[in-house]
Length: 322
Image 1: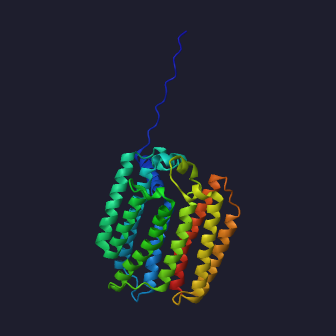
Image 2: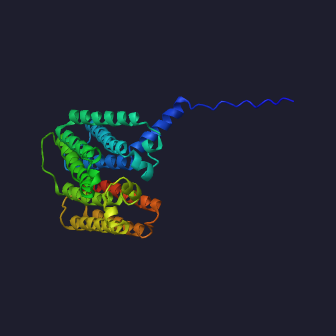
Image 3: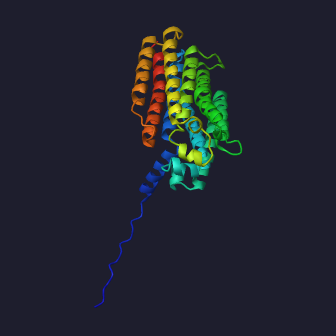
């Protein structure tokens, strides 16, 4: 008796909408969402501080300027994090296997096109919007390139890697964005930076140093295998974790003192209370971190980024409430 094998039903192919959604999700991961949120809040926060220091009221022209600046900064952000992923595929397959290049969701050519297009767009948009923005974007892209790309590849050296990260996030972005927005709001090349912007810049500078050293704790295995020297490999996870906590503590205590004594154009009560609460949350959350658990460290690192995001809401609000 002959047997007829069952006919296999064809595997359904994803439709256009499914492919498009899948690509968008991969692109979202490729752009490193926490950095996108941080960049967006820094643009909005520095605009709010510049607006608080200007007699100009909000208008549709300023909305276009704000939107264009935001897109230019986002493009620069994608260029920097994308270039880093292009140079770290093998390392990310160990440390961050969920990223699109490491997971095979993007080909190398696709990633190269995204990085190239966003880099060019960032520069063109910045050039069209103003000299301070162009200078800020150009310096940021230059440092981001030196951080990841051989033969310089500054990320190999823990000191210079940290300088790249907190130099861009802490100094270049804050001062560049404020000067850009201040010029557009006042229609003058005013390079005077008020005390509250210097305070925010110093706070973010120190805070970003803590982020820079914390980020390497869960990545120790891949970094060691590919000869990437970090503070974690040199000093150990516990020492770096404690160093980051005390750096953040100094950061918050400095903001408390500055808010009470040195910043006339902010609401001191709001600034002091919010920073005291954030400091308490940071220490409370740090007490439950198991340094042997890679996922627990990664979750704490993301929590520190949330505190970083919060700062770009606290400082502008304190300026607007003054």
